[in-house]
Image: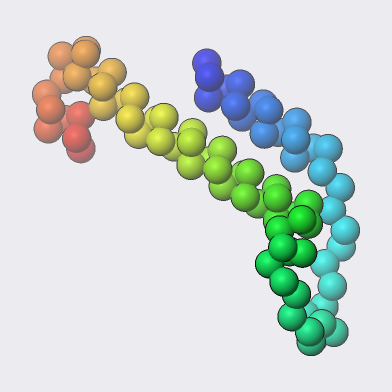
Length: 80
């Protein structure tokens, strides 16, 4: 249930995000500091999406083997 709620929250956040069109890389020749890059909405969304995706995958990969063992599957089946 928590994973479904987490997915809905991520969907709502991504639906409200309004990104500017990307610029051609050949036009931009100067480098920018990481602090300026980290304040961009696209970067923030990428970091949050990665964090939520990793959290969701961790929950699935941890809870599935525990549930299998509690339902009397062998350890080898749960590990596989």
